[in-house]
Length: 89
Image (cartoon, rainbow, N blue to C red):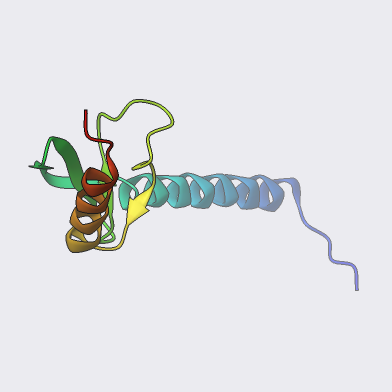
């Protein structure tokens, strides 16, 4: 089936699509933003995402703590394990 769409309708649809795309992008930015205060555990600073996962902040590139963690407990456990595996000088 072919439908005739007037120029005004086509422009309106394009405008609505652009609005929807902007709204989706804004929601993605908002959902990925960090909330709350920065916490520190054994010298590692971390903060919570709006969706409840944790991310380390202020790390050097290629850090083993890069990425997201499901809970603060999991992050603390990984930091403790890394500390135990450090070679003694």
